[in-house]
Length: 113
Length: 115
Image (cartoon, rainbow over all chains, first blue to last red; front, side, top):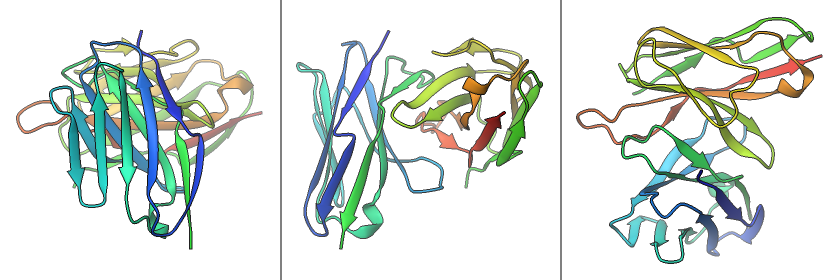
């Protein structure tokens, strides 16, 4: 089955700096890669996603890149702010119907003022 | 706005007790999921359901069962709770029907402690 690894497990950056979180997946058939953000004590929420027919996607300060050949995808956050502090989970799914996601173990991002 | 509601935020049970965790969603989503969240392990899928009375095993179904008698409600059952089932349980729903993207909408979570 699919296996998703995520690095680093913790990341501290100064406010205003950039943060990058990387994930690798094992099954080349995976075709949809979402990122979820979970603030302390709150539910995970989707922040950005990318499908296998696209190499990069941006939404304001966040972007995701996908390298299908290397089977990895990354989350980039620019101009980090304290409210970006959270746990970020990447996921992959083989399923066009999005029914069976495999999540990475998560990255705890701390943005220091 | 999608709302996924889990019946209990915190539960404390004893080893061997039967535990019911209930989840209700109000957006007519066909897919519902139960995940378990443990530090350093991410979110692991226990069971999911893509229709009423249908269920599929996820990655860690052992020790759990589920019930989906109505489209809006998905229950997770621990027949005989054990201490290694102490965890945060997250319910989620999604739709891949017309206009649906497969985005998971999560509940607030149920933190279960088994003594």
